[in-house]
Image (cartoon, rainbow, N blue to C red; front, side, top):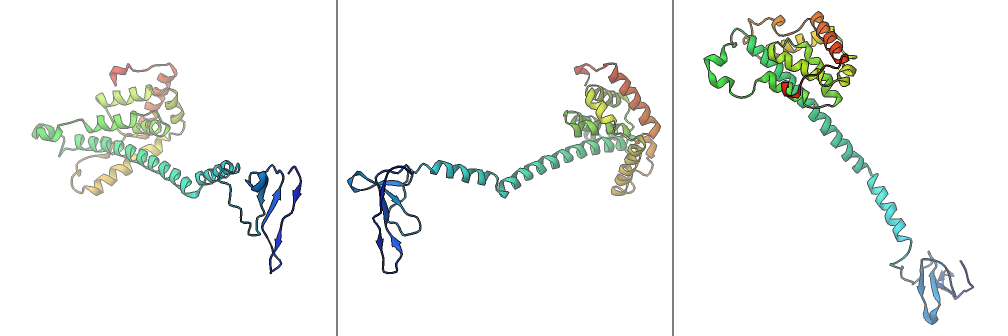
Length: 245
């Protein structure tokens, strides 16, 4: 504060001070014009009649503090967590949908009761093949969870064009596939396929009585062999032309 101050205070009946301090000049954002060209500063806490200055220089700082508090409020953080959870849930659903499409497609195609379904009823096979569709869903993205699940598809006994598409998809992932391969346990993958197979049997009792698990699930040794061959091919820089998949 600069300048001189002359105290013009009135003492009320209760001996409390009420009023304002009249100042010749004070470098303070709460100053207001006073009669005679002098500045009047409010004395907080003592019922000063001066009105707050709407253009006070402290307002931008206060606004900034309020904005930061609002941005860091629990509600804002909760919204971010909710969006992250929705994204994670969608990823899980997409992967499970792709895996289920592949496994169910294999079971229907190799089940004695349904393997000739397409020739018996052309309407049963209109549209994309389940195995192709499931593989396309899982291989379509280059995110770590999808690449890892793409490698895990080696647990299914996919043959023919489907096997070529799977191998090409893995080769085209390059170093990401190599990273995902480090966490693969062939024995565990073989068990997973058998568990999934059993789940579908329990969901559809009597529908797959003649289907053998070895017709659908790869054995540990087969998974290990496929994995080794793929890693060697990736190390050599081999990839499939884009048009092949």
